[in-house]
Length: 220
Ligand SMILES: C[S@@+](CC[C@H](N)C(=O)[O-])C[C@H]1O[C@@H](n2cnc3c(N)ncnc32)[C@H](O)[C@@H]1O
Image (cartoon, rainbow, N blue to C red; front, side, top):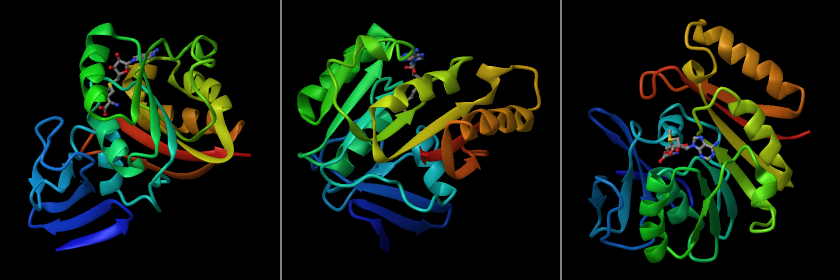
């Protein structure tokens, strides 16, 4: 039984817990090792390989993405999560997918050849000024970057967010401080974010992603 959580996103209750599915932009085709259902019309969103996937299992109010949206994705890697957002925004949307590793980006370019709503950008998200002429205002910013200054990188990139847009930060506590209690790291991140944005929702991602936490925010 699939329950539609929002357009293009479905939840299925299985014996092992909830599973999430997106409507496949390219029916029948997989992107990683995800399962397909309904003649390949649906792709299962891994809750162990994607921070937004894990966040879904923690029940956010809503993933603030709809058909036709423009997204800035920081730390795109090979495109696992990007591919599900690509499903959700559909053919009229666009994802600017920033990744600084050439090796990862190469695989993302192959994905973007098939999925025309992904624009890979080889850049360091620490320097948004280097890609600002390439992108436009966006409806949603998502960041999954394991760097010590990940909060600072996130805040710098919010200049691309529309006034009514939403943004999500996946925090990896051990990248900020490898020895500190993760709860103290999350509290420090919360404090840092609150100075600049409104926090709408936050959850730790354990047990799906150990020592990770997500924050959904909007501009003040
Ligand atoms: C945990 S992986 C992201 C996984 C991806 N979000 C997914 O779910 O498919 C983090 C990625 O961020 C990239 N990264 C790290 N620092 C970066 C930076 N300063 N600018 C751009 N990309 C960065 C890494 O190369 C890596 O591919």
